[in-house]
Amino acid sequence: MSILVNEATRVLVQGITGRSGSLQTKSLLDFGTRVVAGVTPGKGGQEVCGVPVFDFVDDAVRAAGGVDAAISFVPPLNARDAAIEAMDCGIRLLVLTMEGIPKRDVLEILSCARFRGARVLGPGTAGLIAPGKCKLGAHPTRMFIPGGVGIVSKSGALSYEIGKTLTEAGIGQSTVVALGGGPIWGMTQKDALALFNEDEETKAIVLLGEIGGNTEIDAAEYIARTPVKKPVVSLIVGRSAPEGKSLGHAGAIIRGGKGTARSKAEALERAGVKMAATPAEVVARLRELRL
Image (cartoon, rainbow, N blue to C red; front, side, top):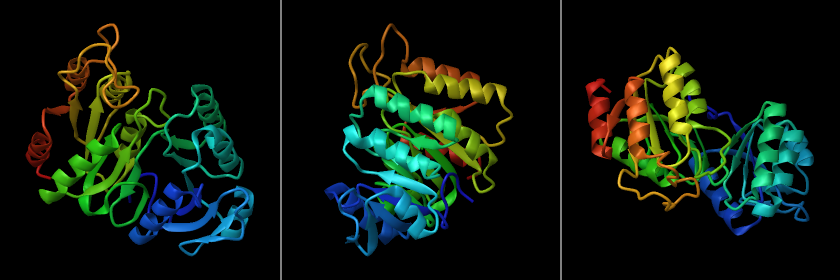
């Protein structure tokens, strides 16, 4: 088991003929992801790495005999229409890799997803990987091995670093999920915790956070009030971040004294989460759990 994807997940690539779309399609196929179709309006009839290209999602879904997830590399101003087209065709997991989508469009995508019962990962996400099964995004495959630790992170780069650190320590991962840099998110840490909590393969959860926003606090409140069956280890980066300065991600900014690394770490610790200050300490905390 894993969360969100597995070896049977059938994947559609939106914007497949563009530079990023074609490059990432090859990477997904090399990993073993079941990419069954691609879509770029006006490019129907072509192939990318042997994957058939269609003008419309509806045509692609019918030709492929069904699609479970879509990963999108379309330009930001086209992201709203592409996402809604995918959801209209019954696709229930969307991975939005692009940054710079107008906030109004993001809100419309998320509103449509709630109405349709779809999950949206991103915008601005590096995607996710279930080692040995499926990847939908840019995670370097050599940094991950199959195992029992679920990782959720806002930052793709931090998820790579922690995945590499765990892999080098011989600790494998069930699924690694990068949520994106915000400031508006589809899936949150709380959503991933709920899925990992019910996943039989996941034995422990690593929650990686950063300054800004309130989603880590929401995750702490969820852990405090929910019978989370798996131990949770957390690392919050940005402990020395100055107020009012965005660090890397649009959502990584402290305003009015809120969203600090310390406030998030304290809330998680009160909820029973084992805190780590460095990647090496994440390994140490997991070792204490005999993982």
